Image (cartoon, rainbow, N blue to C red; front, side):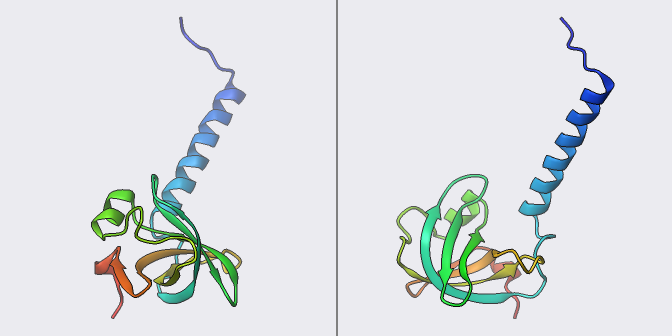
Length: 128
């Protein structure tokens, strides 16, 4: 049995696939982030360890709640950051690249320091 799509339906499916695929690629690469690295300090409010990449929700005194994207789960684990490495309420310092969209509170971390312990997620990307 062969499925048939009308041209408009097929065009919609193709456009949706390209849009979703492009958004996922852009978000998981570095193209969406500034080249310059900045430091963000705050308190961990939420932790997610899992695919497609672990994330933290970090509250800062100045800007409120930020999403911090870590490396993929395997790379994050190799950096030593895993379940139990941190918990909500811990103080954190993030070195990373923030979103080029200034209204977005989103940063990709290259290094995080939780309660004085460093986790080098992308040591080769740390700017000197």
